[in-house]
Length: 214
Image (spheres, rainbow, N blue to C red):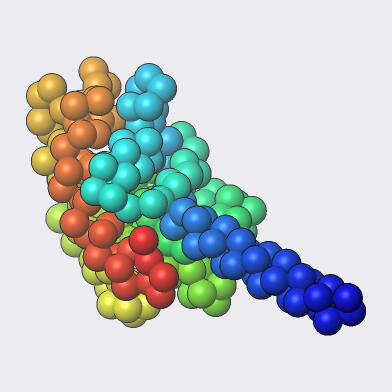
């Protein structure tokens, strides 16, 4: 009987281990969209924001993902840096980092968002969390010097930290009638659809580059 009990105990342990492995594999690939109102879904209804639609688009392509919305309307890179540690939980596998638009709209000297984004990328690298950097572009009315300095932040930091760059988060939406809300700043639901469509291949590549990517 003792031998049979050992066999039974061994079988139970084996099945438990198989269940644990299966459960671990069932965990979705965890993405955090970390940004400002463009990420938060300002002015949009439930399910119309960027993170919701990105998650739906990735799942439609067969990727088991969970995309969390860590966007805060009005956030600057300074605010983002202050809340980064608690806004990006342990277990996150990819962060889509989208900040800088509010710094630019307030005319903050480009050296400040550059420093803040640099620190955020360094923190995420230290935590071994992959990053997709979403770029922003300065409004022309801020002057050529400001525009040149601000626009250079994103490609230069992407190169420094060897992270993928999506050059302009509002590509195809900025300045386009019907793609923005009446304020002329934030994307409409239709605009979000286009944003997701355009960034999707870059997100998929970023996921694939992460060990165990969905």
